[in-house]
Length: 206
Figure 1 (spheres, helix red, strand yellow):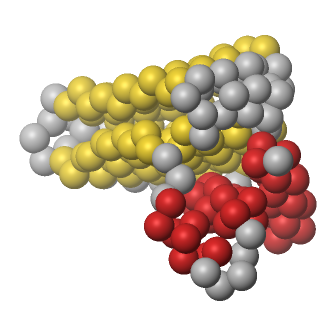
Figure 2 (cartoon, one colour):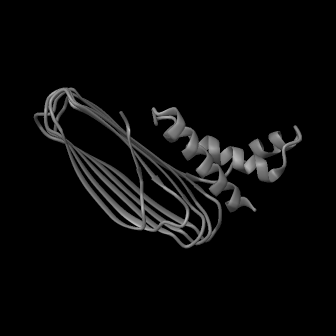
Figure 3 (cartoon, rainbow, N blue to C red):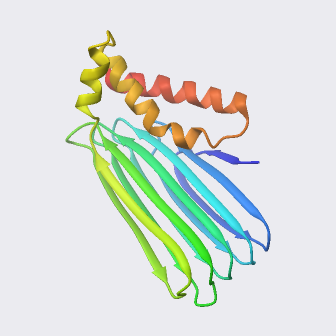
């Protein structure tokens, strides 16, 4: 079962140890108005361990959001994935730091990390630093990060079909964070959180 954490104001520190053959799935959600400092240390300490960490954050005011994830691959045949997607508006500041550390003995590792962001205003800032630190040679690892704006061509397309500019922007932002919310297995919980994010996003575009 996927663990869903609604991040509150303040600091969140978590250390997770995934043993041989175990799997952990986690979704971190940061709603508008929340300033936080999140630090996750995930250690895959047994063969065949797997860890998947997902996150979504929407900031529309003066929030300061810091997220740092260290993913340690200590032994062979372990897999991990990180996917974080965020929207920053107002004068908010987002700092994302992610690091995958693959030990020399951790052959046959598969580890992937992505951080994608949309800026809504010139005053918002996002600093993203994905990193790889690999000491093994038989691995499949990648990392990537993007910072961009809402696609105006998509907005034009939707407006040509009778959708207002406001609704077009909302649909774009909902679609952007949807891959994170879709990880949540419990249907009722997933739908409730999707509604909360949609309500929050609509307030950003008014």
